Length: 288
Image 1 (cartoon, rainbow, N blue to C red):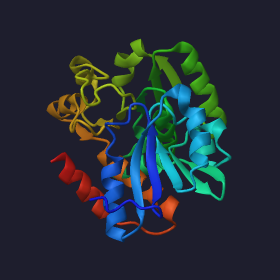
Image 2 (cartoon, one colour; image 1 turned 60 degrees about the vertical axis):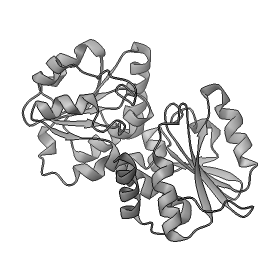
Image 3 (tube, rainbow, N blue to C red; image 1 turned 30 degrees about the horizontal axis):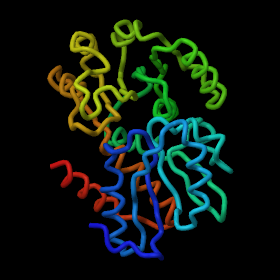
Image 4 (cartoon, one colour; image 1 turned 90 degrees about the vertical axis):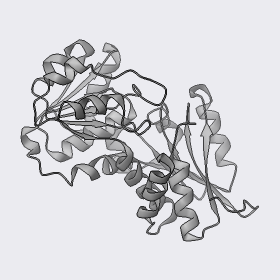
């Protein structure tokens, strides 16, 4: 529960559009309360065309100490910041921003957050090609994570040829990796035949959307060893993961990624260890 908000209260938040679906306030405010801090974490619904104005305006409010970024701002925010960390620069996307004096410093906690649940699995990643659905800011972090896992080839699928060409050029330049391939959406069936892990990095299937990024027939193509990973965590599970589970595949949703990237972000803001189990339990109770 959020305590009293006073003139001394420092503010953190999440910026996106839409942002009403975000569960970040649930876990962050639970951690803040557990630590007894005079902070509050709130949503900032900011449309794309208002992003530049918002970033400049928030800097003038001294009580705002930092914020997360979600769809559609992770890439567009880069030129609006004063500095970005090496990981954010390598990925080409920012999901966490911290005030340092009067400067905005951006970083990326999505890579580590995405990897955490995969570290618990015993997989021969060098023989598991990755197929990433989508080419936004989250997909950039997933590419970096799959590269760290050691996947032999990383396939990224998108609908806009110009965007995909730019994505490929940017990512290979930033990550110095040439095992990255980009494909049109129609290539999905061919790619799924040999996929070791399929990651949905699109908003398809998010709360209120009953669609799936790939169909039941396409899921049937996947090898028995394949892992289905959806970055979406509401609903839980998504239709995509329901179909994957029914097919007998290992399925991972975005909740653990959310928790772990959130804990890393909170530590980045506060410069202290945070109660990650409190964050996890707050989310599980909310979703129940």
